[in-house]
Image 1: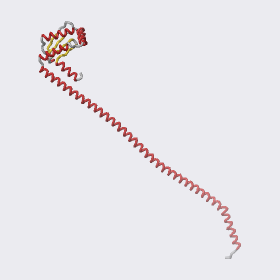
Image 2 (image 1 turned 90 degrees about the horizontal axis):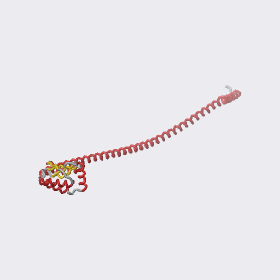
Image 3 (image 1 turned 45 degrees about the vertical axis):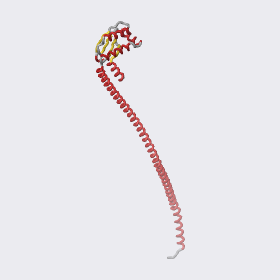
Image 4 (image 1 turned 135 degrees about the horizontal axis):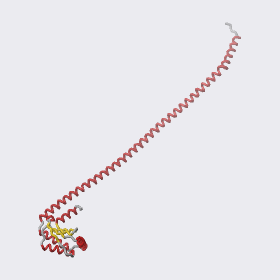
Length: 248
């Protein structure tokens, strides 16, 4: 093949024309497309980096929130435990107060029951003592003992206070009662006269006395002047002693 310079130059010219055509019609659009694609990619990369940064920030916030939540949960747990402990202590104190109050109530009831039992035993012992004394006095009772009680009564009658005498006078003046004299043994005429004289001197009036016998009074005498009763006998004294001891 022979080398032809004209053909060679024409080929060179065609090459440069082709390069110009490609550059003019294809290179710039392709570069523009590439630039647009690169810009898109850069935008997407920047967006991805932003999203990654946001994701990391959210992750950090989430982790911080988890830490904060754990701390808050721990604080809430401490507060809850404190509240439960305080409530438990309050309930225990309330229970202790209720138990102490109940124990005090039970102790008071037991003490009262013990006092009642002791009082009952004392009353029973006193009644037994009175009954024993009554039986013993009945065995020791005699006409001579009654005579001494009558004499004692006559001596005491002269020692009545002015108020006692006035009360008796008021009763006698209002009621004009029969005077009943009860003894365990028959009175001697001398004692009847002495008793009648002493009471008549007390009232400054003529009086009438009725005499009765009642062995239950053991020894001594009981004088009923209307609603007023004078006791000078062992049975009434024992009854008075028993009632006084029982608080009656």
